[in-house]
Amino acid sequence: FSTETPQISPKFTFFAGKRLPPSVYLLPPPAEEISGPRPTLSLTCLVRGFFPENIDVQWQKNQENLGFAQNPGNSGAET
Image (cartoon, rainbow, N blue to C red; front, side):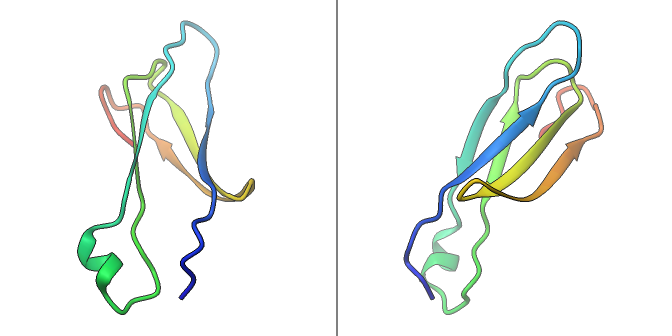
């Protein structure tokens, strides 16, 4: 198990029209995961307050794409 902290940064894509940038919160893993024997941890990204409602969030580790999550456009939805 590595104690090295990778650089993880979300990347956002906006669509045309009025824009409001998101507030982004990276939440750490629960304490029981950190102190437990498992080599994987949960990392949560809370994105809110953005407009337009459709947004893609890409996960990157050391500037390499890992995947993305799509917000289906629900009013006030969080990805």
